[in-house]
Every structure is written in C-alpha cells, then in structure tokens.
Length: 141
Image (cartoon, rainbow, N blue to C red; front, top):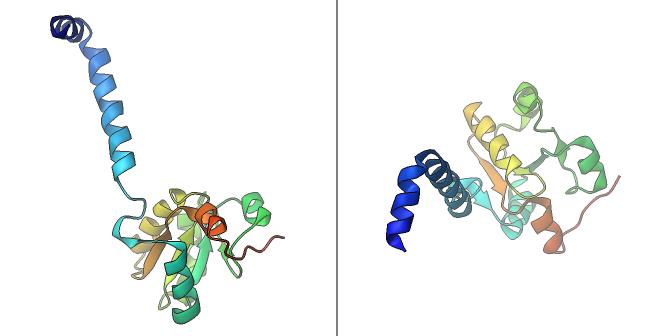
C-alpha cells in the first residue's frame, strides 16, 4: 500500500503538491482564530458596549444589515471599508467591536482599523450569528 502511495506521489507531484497546499490552508483556517487574540465573544462584546461605551461597526452589506443588526451599530460594508474608515475618527478613543455574519469579514476590518491607528479594536467571534444564538437583542429595519 505505501509503495503505491509513493509511486502515485512520484508520478503526480503537481497534484500531490496542490493537495498539500489546500490541506495546509484548511488546517490553518480551522486552527486560526478569526481576529486572533483580539476576538471577543458576545458576552464580552456586551460588557464592552455597556461599560466602556464601545462602538459596534457592522461590515456586512446594507441588505444584510437591514435584515438584523446589533442596536446602534454603524454599517460600513467591507467593500470599500478602507475608504470609509474616516467615518470612525470621532470614535478613535473608544473600543470598537467589528461584526459580520460569522466573524471572518470583520477580522479583515479589524486589520484595516489597526493599520489606520485604531488601538482598541475587537472582532465579534461568530459574528451576528453568535450574537443571535446568545439571545441578544437585534434591531430590524
């Protein structure tokens, strides 16, 4: 059996290499925490909002935002987010919680905000789905 695998790998190096790259990417995606050490769960986000006056930035599309969002959230879609970071300048000294559907798009927004000099930026782990699963309030417009 192992001889056949070695022969297959020798005959199909490009295919095996592609498989290993995809496998590595999948493992990295499963192991890596969106938002890294700056991720926060819904309970932690609620504490930041209630006790430290955190600003919630929802990076989903306008249509997704209208379907339901965290109360008082600011909608700045990820598409073109870097060009609209200026809207958040007045909140520079407050904690910011970035939100999307599942927590991956908001991780990219967190990186963009940190790159723009925002220090206290958190990613809502699990996104609005985790927020709703925790039975926290959602505003629908």
